[in-house]
Length: 289
Image 1: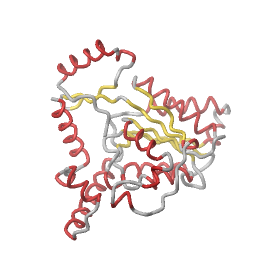
Image 2: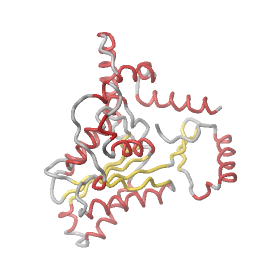
Image 3: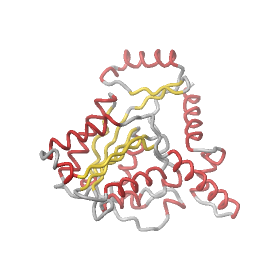
Image 4: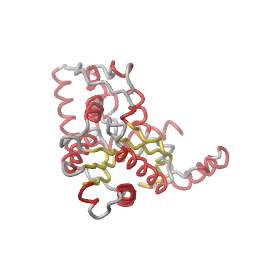
């Protein structure tokens, strides 16, 4: 769920936030405030994911760190850190289907996926920085997406702002960018921006790699727009396909964690991801009151 502090009319929010600053010393950071329909959503956390297994791949990691730093400076929000997949243990998906049928993965207890899922869910803005390996994503990135496969059916990233940056020496950046964007779209994520870097081509203009990375990181963040919803049609079509599939399963008596989730969460009573998210936020503020 998105890190929402409160949803209040502006004047009520001002009093609430002023009291937080005065009483708890939260003046060390300034939350990004997105106003919508007379209500206020506070977005607090950004997560940047460096998607390579190569510990010596300084390009991907350096780009990830710079992007994370510039996002925090631009929006004055808190950095959850750069999630460097090279430092994490991610077991291969066994294909047991436990995540779909029972809502949990047994492998989460023996590797780092439990932690990874937690930071993904805590973040409000997620930036995926992924290099091209053999015209596709690196193996560890594929393992990560495989282990999050059930999120494609229960929409765990609904409300999250997603940015994708792919980099390659020569080719494959567009394909990988589309692939990664689609996967995170199917999890409910809102793609707000994406860019690609062909290193060999760009170094003909800027031969200093470190300088090139810094320039591209700044451009990437400056071009981003939190109000964009590039993948809106994909998300809408995915929602309808899932909803119809769940309804058929229920009618046939094929019950599972997935069907139970759609019923208990109220998804079946909604016509879109965004409608469901808005109802969740309304329930959150009602519980606060």
